[in-house]
Every structure is written in structure tokens, then in C-alpha cells.
Image 1 (cartoon, rainbow, N blue to C red):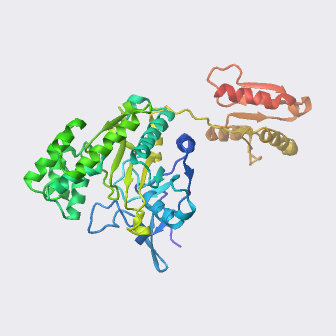
Image 2 (image 1 turned 120 degrees about the vertical axis):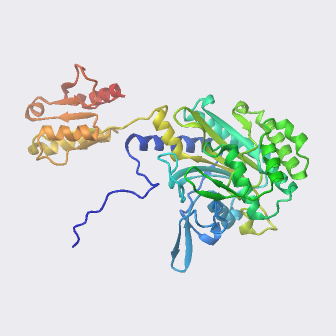
Image 3 (image 1 turned 120 degrees about the horizontal axis):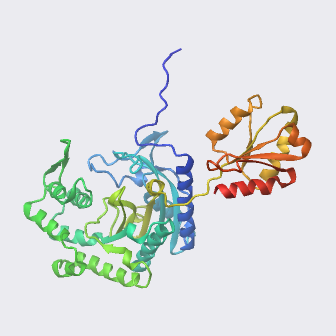
Length: 467
């Protein structure tokens, strides 16, 4: 037998969550789900694995190796992929059951996804939780898109982000796509490289200078690593950069004359008209550089950025857009079914809220019933059952051979709220002694003895005081 010890660590980019961080994540999910339901979305629990051929990979940076950024496995005679987002799986799910669904299908899903990302502690992981909302059907697009914009703003405010702490950036992929067509860029791999380059404008490590390099032959970062570029001509690069420099949305219509760009501009105008009916218009900005690197997007796009000192500007927490042809890949091109959706980064939002401590959570620190004498075990369990029947989180110490000091040391590590201490005198006098384990130093009421019949009320008083 080998004497080598296993090292108790996780793979890079994966993490465990416990304690307050776990409670914050639970509250984030609950807040989002409640708001999704409030906006008329119905839940769908999606499979974590899909047949690889069905969902492909729309996130790969290397078109020569499209599955390089996802986790794919051989299972019996099938190749299966762990989901990298919720949208590709939704397309499959909808295509399989659309005849049983309403003509406009609004669904939300919450779950983990996994990607072969370059991790950054807490903010970018290889496995993380998303909460998605999608609308599928032949709808008036500006109305559906406005609904999702309003949902984003409303949800973030319900998570206690103030208006000046986030902005919702919208664009339309057709605007840049029309320019690409106008510049006679016809190679599909080259087009994708252009979109992926533009999408990095807001990355502080890349910026506009790095985007110029990515539109050219290559970009070399500080470490010396080389990323192949779109290999455009100097004139093509200048025209794209010139377009990205236009910050005034109205000016775009005077600069871009091609039909597809004009279509994207007109769709954006109509969206702003609908947004004007709601109360979140001042949270929404047009940002032409938002093109989204996931290549199933086809029209309206959104990316929501958090602006906080500890996290810098431009950290994305919710993004999405329209996808016109994704479901058609299952139903057939003759029967397309457009969709639009958004995805909240639950793990990232939770990490931010944990850091800035703006989300109040109710921590249920259980009450500990100490065992001073095993001959009273039946009475200790009576106390335990009474508290649990009254919905007071509670536990009994499970090793009665340990002395009171050891039991209270356990309670401290466990973060128990109250210790119920009963020995021979308490049982004789029909009293209980309650020790406030979370009391502020110097509190004179650290430990009290009360009548046994007042146990529930007195425990609740202490718990309420601690909260």
C-alpha cells in the first residue's frame, strides 16, 4: 500500500462555497427567481449534458478547434458535452417540445455551466452558476428586448445595487455586421475574428490599441503570448476603428449607409421608444463596441457592467441578445423560430455582494442543546423536539462523553447562537440556563436562567437580539 498522501485541493478554476458566501448566493438566486416569476417567466430545469453534435460550441476562440473551450466526453457511442451556457440547450429543449408550448414561450433556468476559461479568483472561474431568462416566438422584438432590459435593471436594484453602480449597455450586431459586409470581408472565420476583436475594446488589458492589433495580423501581450488577428488591410482597420470611435448614436445614421447597418440602427431606435415607457431608461446606454463574442447572436445585444472601486469599471454581470437561427438548426431553416435572452452571472454577482456587504442575509445559527448528564438524555431530546417544532434551528451535542468546555468550543467553531444548559439543578427547579454565544463583549445578560415553560420565548428573544 502506498504511503503517499492525497493533496486536498481542487482543480484550478473550481471552488467550494460555504458559510456566508453560500447564504449570499442562495439569496441572489431566490431574488432573481422571484423577479423572473414576477415578469411572467416559467421555470425549466435543463440537462447538464447535451449531445455534442447538437449544441456544438459557440464560444471557441480557435475556429480550427471549436470544442477546445468546452468539456466533452465519450459516453458509450455518444460524444457528450457539459453545458457551457443555457441557451444552446434551450434551443434543443424547445425544438423537442414546441408543439406543447405557448406561441410565446418565456422560460427561466438556473444552474451551473463549465468552460475552459483562464480563471481569476472569484470573478472568473471554470465552473459557475448562471440564471437565464429567454423569450422564444414571433414577437415584436423591441418589446421583448425592452422587457429584458427592464428585468435586468429591476433585478439588480432588488439586489441592492444603486443606479450609479451599474449601467446597461445595448447595441445591435447588425450595425457592425453591415460595416463588415460593406468592407468586403466575406470569409466567415475572418468575420468571427473581427467580432471577437471588437468585443475586447472594453478589456482594460487590451483596449483600442490591442483591438487594432487583433484586427491586423496578430497581437502580442506583455507575457509574449501571440494571438492571431483577423488580418485585415490598413484601410479596413481604420474604417472599423473610426466607427467604434462614434459615441453619438444619432451620428451613426449619417455615417453608415448600408442596408444592414441601417436596419440595426432603426431597431435600436424602436427599442429606445419602448424603453421610454418604463422607468429604467436612464440606466441604458448605447455602446457600439458591444458585439458579444458568442457567434449565435444576430441582432440586439446587451451587456451590463458594474462600476465599483474594488472591481474597476466594466465588469460584466448580465449579458445576452437575440438569436435568430439557433432553434432553426433543429427545426430546419424553412421554419425559423427567433429567440432572445439574458444571463445573470450568479457566481460573479454573489462574489461582488459578498465583498461590498450590501445584501442583508439572515444567518440561521442553530441553538445547541448541551448534554451534561447522560441520564437526562430523554429530557434533552424533549427540549430539542420542542424547539424544532417551533421552527427554531437546533441540534444536540452528539458526543456526550465530552465535558462542557469541549461542547462550548464546538459551539464557537460551529457558530451556534445559544447554548441550552441543563443539569440536575435545572431539571429539579424546572428551569433552563441559556448562554448567548454571539453576545457582544461586556453584555451583562450573557447567561440567564429562566423557567422551563418560557424556553421558546426566551430563546427567540436572544436570537432576535443577535440579529
